[in-house]
Amino acid sequence: MNRNNPDTISQKYRSEVQTSGYKFVISYAEKLDGDTVEVLHQHMEFEIYYVLDNRIVSRVEDAELTLNRGEFLILAPGRKHHTVYEPGVDKTYFVLIFSVEAQPNLKSAQPEYRLQFEEIQDRLDRVRDLGHLVAPGHPDMDLILDRIRQEMIDRRTGWNNLVNSYLHHFFIHAMRGVGTDRSAVPAPSEHLNLGVEATKFMHSNYHRDIALEDAAEYLHISPRHVNRAFRQLFGSTFQKTLSQFRLNYA
Image 1 (tube, helix red, strand yellow):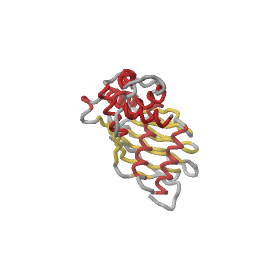
Image 2 (tube, rainbow, N blue to C red):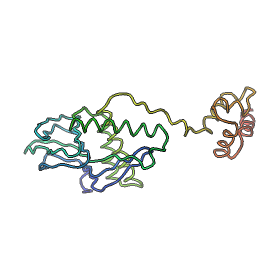
Image 3 (cartoon, helix red, strand yellow):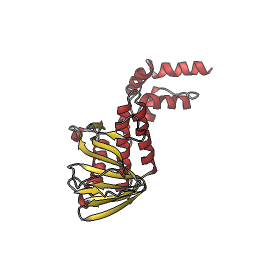
Image 4 (cartoon, rainbow, N blue to C red):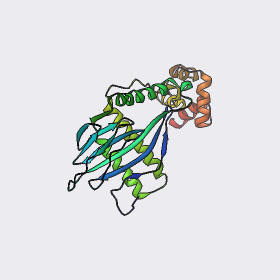
């Protein structure tokens, strides 16, 4: 990256973002302009072209496509394409080449993680079936790229991790453009912060004659589980924490 150019976004090293259901693998990401000359080429991964300013003309196999500002083109692996070089046309666009891989332990993972991967895979399969797809982007995609640019300029602690995370967010917004149906992934109740939720229950009901069993019934878990969560969070039992809270309030 040229640090003297504040408009540069360039991620040319292969990197990964790990989720509980899949790996988002980034092969290349860069902000380009009208001076860029592309030859006809193809990738064995997915590719997104997102227009930041003006428009671009892309040729995909035998089709010629015009993408306006805020629109994106997503290509299936193996599709021959290039962006048409137009001397004198001032334009900027962002390119992201990526793949998505299931986690090795996905079959034994929590159901919501399997469903999360299946929904992403379903959208990518739509692109595979069509070969390519043009869709309107989300306004947040511009904001995400601005954050990436700023992280690359500042290079403060953890900047590279944030860049990869933002690229994953960009990808998620693109997937929402590919398929607009509502997600069926439930909240991961298995990972509910029981200590915090029990504390909320205690704060709302401290003036009543409540006990550990009441909190357990509210959270649909065993009293022993509630106490274990409290010891991890506060180093004390539910009842001792409740007594201390009542004393402080008094």
